[in-house]
Structure formats: structure tokens, C-alpha cells
Length: 415
Image (tube, one colour):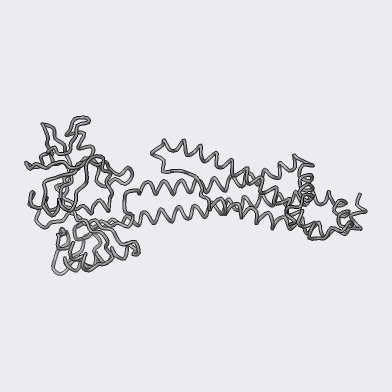
């Protein structure tokens, strides 16, 4: 097979080492271009990983619905009417909107509730929740467990407390499990301690969770609901479901269809999709800039090879006179272009991996910077490598065609 032709490779190496400084400068352009491309791809991957880390533990297709106050009069009602939801609304939405996967209503006493234990008190938020809230915003349980369905069914007087509440109410390293805390004169047994999600912090750590049914019975909240947290099945988009929810609730509570303040919503998927669009655009921008930089480097290789073809006019003429076909001459010139670009590209790859590894080590200790593991993937490297070889072949055709157009008789006359 011609690619294993020993004589061809000897000629290629002799040509490239004949003027080492010029070969080095030729490779430098491809080397720098490869570094720029891979560092841009690595930085983009780091940002993507950083944003994914921020949303870790939070379902990105989640939606929060809460009541507000009307801003438009409607059907005899004045503006400024407060809208409050009930458990009936939870069942209504479950029945009429099949796109809803998880539904987790919450009711609360609000912030600043005094939770007591052994003379210590904390101004905590006290919430009545279902276990499904953990599917919407994942809790990092560090001791014990979270609420479960048996707690709901049996209206158990148990609670899960945040790390901050634990530090206020308990001694350092004291085991809180099985201990009691008092909320508005009612004792609850601690069954778990959690830490907040490091990035997306919805609840904080100075909070006490009790079963929803226990909250209703203990604090007399009736069927009142503070807000509804839910997730949407992955095959559906959140915004259309959000509009259906608003339409159903507006119809039930006689709210003007154009009133956008009566029902509040927070769509986490919109934030996540915006970030995804940004990182995707950044990735393609990196490919565009890096690709054109690589093209510029490969064009430099072509220009240098055009010069070497002119310098080797007599050599090419002798080879043609001895029987070398145009294909053989073309092949050697193109292989020279490939060897230069591939070798420079591999050096650029190794340098880029080293820089990104150092950057990863430095950034891993910086929690405030949303960049995690800025390492490009195998697909990016293979794509860059294929692009580099493809460009080198295309650009190598220019000096190769120039070489085969040289007539042997004219080349032999060249001084």
C-alpha cells in the first residue's frame, strides 16, 4: 500500500528537515490555531458543566404557582382581590392537566416562627409539605431521612430541619434524631437534617418541614395552600402547561383573562433553556472562530509548500522524467501538508490538555466561579482532528496541482 512506502516517507522527512526553521514557523500557525480552537471548546464545556452543577438537585422542568392580587376588575369584583389556593385546586389541576408529573402543594407559617428546644429558639420558616417536594427541589439529607408517605397518612408529628436550625437548637455534634422541638406549643420529633442545594437555594437552611396533613390538623390551616410546586413530564414544554393552569384557575376564581398579577408563576425551565441556548451558541461561536483560525494556519502551510514546490522545480522535473506520474507527485505534496498539520495539531492538543488541566485544578477551589471541568470531550477532539486533516488535504491540492503542471523538459532546464 502506497501509504507505507518507505521511500516516500524518507523524501517527505528530507524535505521537511531541509529547512527546519521554516518548517517550525509553518507548524506554529497550525499549533496556535489548534490551541485556540480546543481552549475555546474547553472553556465552553466548563461553563456548561458549571451551569449544570448550579441546577444539580433541582428539576429543571419545574413550575411554581402561587396566588397574588387582581389588577383588573372582573364580573363585579374590584381590583386588589387576594387570590388564595386550596387543596381542591391541587386535585382540579391533577385531573385536568395530564402533563403534570409531580404535584407538591405547600402551606406554611412563614418566616420568623420561634422553634424552641432546651431554652434555645430559632426564627425559622415552618412548612407543611408532601414528600414529593423532594422531587422538585432535592434536599441533601445529612442525618436521618426526609418526610415519607407514612408520615402523611398517619399525620405523624415528625419534622425535618435545616442545618442552620440544627446548629441553633442543638449542641455541636449532638445527635438530633429522636429529639423533640416545639413549634407554637406543639412538639415534633426530629427525623432528619438537611443541607440546602449549594446553588439553587429555594428554602434556605433555617427551616422546619412537617407533614402536610399534620400541619393542617395541628395549626388549623384547613384546606389552604400557600403555593403549588410541580414538575412537568419531560416530553412536554412547561410554558404551554403554565398557560393551561392559569386559564383553569382564572376561570374558577373569576379573574379577568388579561390579568397577569392575580396568579404568580415561576418557571425554572425558562431559565435553564435560556442558559442552554447561550452555551450552545457559545459552542458554535467557538467552533466558528477556532475553525477559521485553523483555516488560516493551514493556508500558511499551503503558501510555504508553494514556495518549496518552486524551489524543487528541478527535482520534480527529474522525478517526472524518471517516470513519476502526476498522482505520485500530488500524493507526496499532500502528504507533506498532512504531516505538518497533524504533527502541529497533536502538539497543540497536548498543550491544550495541559492548560485545561491546570485551569481545572485552579478553578476547582473557586466556588464562586461557575466553571467546572473545562475539558473538551472526545467528540470535539475527533471533530477538530478530522477538520484539520480535511483542510490540510484541500489546501495541499493547491501546491500539488502547481507541481504537476510543471513540464519535465522545462524543469530540467531550471537553474
